[in-house]
Length: 298
Image (cartoon, rainbow, N blue to C red; front, side):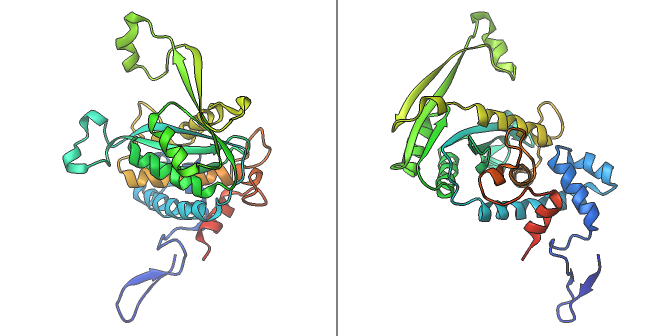
């Protein structure tokens, strides 16, 4: 990529719209495709014969622009039912090794909040941070601004949801919580702390929190299935590996890239189209090349 030097300030620059990334377009598309399919940074660098820092630069640039694209296009969404949930991962270290005084909330356990339209499978809103009241409020506030009209919402039994959802969606809301009940033998309590998968589900407890939600729409199956897609198509969420994020900023960029590729580029098997087409956000299915053109457009 040709670079130029300013005659006044002597600063170098390029004319490409990707903030100075000196890459061929084919190489850039290949890197974005591999990252959106779940390959890690170093694996992508080996396949594309690039430096890992170059792959990180692409992730940061494209991720930031994908976040802006999602914020611009996913607006005034009309859907019958929403499902909300959080998915866990870690950044740099485990929670017990995170030095709060030195690094604050940037390291340790991090949760990605997701809100998905049940019928259209569209990820309407996402937010990453600690699992606390402040981040829950920021997530639901952003979600409420993207939804148009009356909606039914289902969440798990996480207590802050019950007040925050009413505060931001009150007056146009039917709301219920679903809590799954699991069997836990007395002699297996210590083992349950260490394992990742839950015990056998023995039932569910449904509680109506607001309005009159339709019984057949009270479930969290679609959002839990989307959590599986997050872990499958994002190396940073893989458990018991070295692919976890080292900085919270890059972690958020990777999530923004995944959400945008999922909404606009990945054809859902039950919809026969992308979620963005099903929700009438765009008129046709996008490719990764079309996504890059969209995020780099003036």
